[in-house]
Image (cartoon, rainbow, N blue to C red; front, side, top):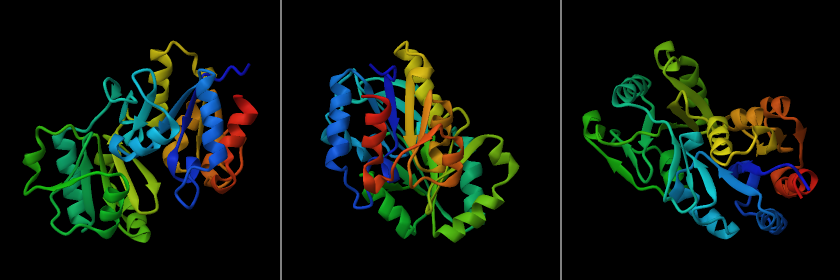
Length: 270
């Protein structure tokens, strides 16, 4: 039997294909792994409301299954009853970030567990798309201080990809010293607590479950998957992964359109 006890799986470009569906053979393979007692942990930049339908579809439920959201800012049970790891931004950090984005004339919002917030009154089309995709209501507030009682798990800037390329290159050292800056898609630039990462959340889960990190596997394709693929006992790059992920991974599987997750589970877990 495989020594892999936890499998951390990204969603976009990994679990789902380009039709935004979970292939039937991927679902079947995940069900087999769950039946054998392997913890299948959906690990995503999305908040819990944006992943709930996937957890339901895969049968990942209850207080003994787990999900990592907000790019590692939060790790909790699949039923949401317990938070086992979290790392957030404080109001001063958010104010500095919001001020910088205002100078760049770039839209930004922040997220807590169940909602998004922005001081922008013109919502960027990519923000509207993202919020609809992850089932997240958006609250427009008049000033930063309205967020003083909100746990800010992450900030996310939304714009055209070339604009975000330019903004990312201009992020000042004062922000980089306080936050991790990651690109989850071409149109998303995310800012999270330095302690928040998919890799740190995976390590925290392994510790909670008393499982050696070498008995974990992580599968992903984008820059925000780097930390978990580097940290896991077996890091798996999708065939469609960016080159940076392929270089850090231990092995490479097929693409998301050719059920690469199913092949990885068959080859290394089942």
